[in-house]
Image 1 (cartoon, helix red, strand yellow):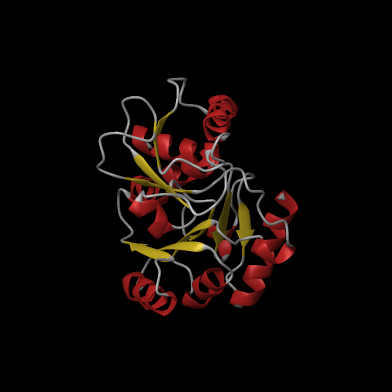
Image 2 (image 1 turned 90 degrees about the vertical axis):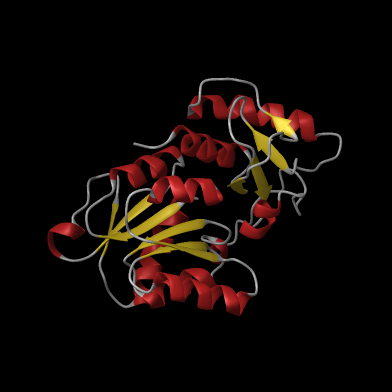
Length: 233
C-alpha cells in the first residue's frame, strides 16, 4: 500500500505540470496548497491556486507542500529539485509536442530491463530509475557520462514505490519484467501513466489496463513503447 507521503508527491507532481518533486528535510515551504482531499479530483483546484500565486512573477515556487506534509523541492530535473533553490523554467510553459520528444523529461521505472533499453530511454531524455542486477553500476556510469543525475538505482525489494515518489514524485511509465507490483500499479494509476509488462509466456499477458511488450531487440521494444505514448498524447 502506498505511503501517504508518496500519494502527496504524485499529486504535487501532477499539479506542477509534471516537474520533478523531491522530498526535503526543510520545515517551511515557499507555497503551501490548501487542505483538500488528497485525490486527483482536487488537482484542478490546486492548479488554479498555484497559477494565481505565480501570476505576478511567472515563476514556480522553489519549494511546495500540503498542510502537515513534507516540504518538496521543485525542479525541471532531479538535481534542481534536490537543491530546492528555484526552477529554471517559466510557469506553465507548454511541453514540447514533437513526436521525438514523447519520453523526454518523463520518469521511467525500469525493472529487470536490458541495459540497452535503459540506455535508449536515457538517450531520449527520460530520467530512468533502474531496478535489477547491475543497476547501481549502470546508473553511476550514465550519470558520470551526463555530468548530472539522469538515473537512480534501487534494489528490488520492499519500499521501491515510496522511494521513487520521495525522490522524483513517481513514474510516468513503467517497463517491468515479471509479476505486476500492486504498489507500482497504484502509483502509475495515480500518475495517469502507462505500465508495460515485458517478457514471454504467461508473464507477457498483462491485465487489460497494462501493455504487453515482448522482450526483443531494444530498438523494436522502444518503438512499441513510444507508439503507445504517442497515441496517448
